[in-house]
Amino acid sequence: MQGIAAWLRRGLPVLAMILLIGCTSRPDMDILAASPGAKADAKALAVYVATTRQRQSPDRNDFTNRRSGALNYAQYSISVPPSHVPGRIEWPGTPADPATAFTPVGDRVLTQAAFEAALAGRGCGAAGATTAVFVHGYNTNFPEALFRLVQITADTDPRTIPILFAWPSDASALAYVADQDSAMYSRDYLADFLVRLTRLCPEGGITLVGHSMGGWLTVEALRQLRLAGHDAVLRRLRVALASPDIDVEVFRTQMKVIGPLTPPMIVLVSRDDRALSVSSRLAGARQRLGRIDVADPEVQEAARAANLNIVDISDLEASDGFNHDRYVVFAGVYAKLAARGAVTPGQGLRQAGAFVFRTVGTALSSPFVLAGRALSPE
Image 1 (cartoon, rainbow, N blue to C red):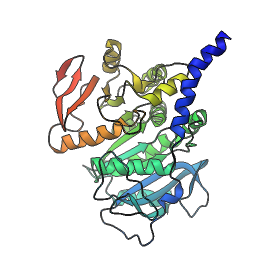
Image 2 (image 1 turned 90 degrees about the horizontal axis):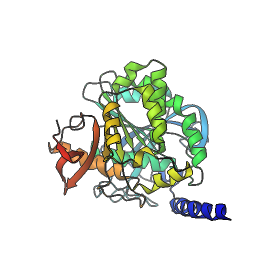
Image 3 (image 1 turned 30 degrees about the vertical axis):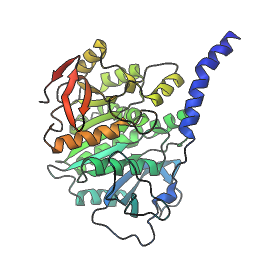
Image 4 (image 1 turned 45 degrees about the vertical axis):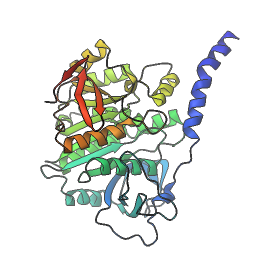
């Protein structure tokens, strides 16, 4: 009986949290259909997709949660309303209103050759160009991942060439293990994709962002690249992990293989991330990387030794109720500060270590704080 009581104390809060995560209504693929009368808009964002999701039919972008035996490619055009609020996704209704909501303008099924030609046409290989690859997290369906990338791109730099790497999440709060398997299934596809992308874009910058379980997939792909001898590919990447759902000890072994990256890998963490608290309990109370304490001297030393920028963003506002999406706010705030010259992208985080990101209004107060003392944003 004591064992049952202990299980109830541990298990019921987790079950309640999982049910809360899964009880909200979700958009489906129909939301990505171009609105009747939608016209091409020069201000619409073109988002490119490489996915291990299977299509229901070969001539339509009707992606499922089944695993594809090869990468599928697509392009979407999404207009952003003039009333857009940074950090927020203005979901379209039926019909979508471009004045108030993200509005699908059109989409194309692409072959690999057409996908690469489209990126080359956008100038991804030119010096000064930036291509961003976003790897979404657990319990995320395709429209949610696509609209999140549109929102981040709109809030940071619309000149960025955004690519969604979509893996076949079941988009169910109860499918954690299934999502882990699908993420692992997608590892080699992501690694091979990064090899081809760096060759296609020889001079442009490539940023790789993994959120939540997508952070675990991202690090696994980096490890695969190192084991395969693709050191030149790793040197081309700027890597950020947002609220990474990775066992801390597993991450330590992954980084032993990957080694220090230049510039340093950025790891965004929140002490009160409730989604990762559930993940930790599901994993037998093992600590998740996205919840570590940057004030811990061991964390600070480990960050310096591995050439990591571990940044605590707990002071920023979260909108999802689980404190798991603060990275969205961080991206927008940091981009605004960079545009005003308050920080220099890539420079303020050049020094490895564990930091706290604090803002006062829209300005930085002691831009990065390490172990209680200010560091200048070099």
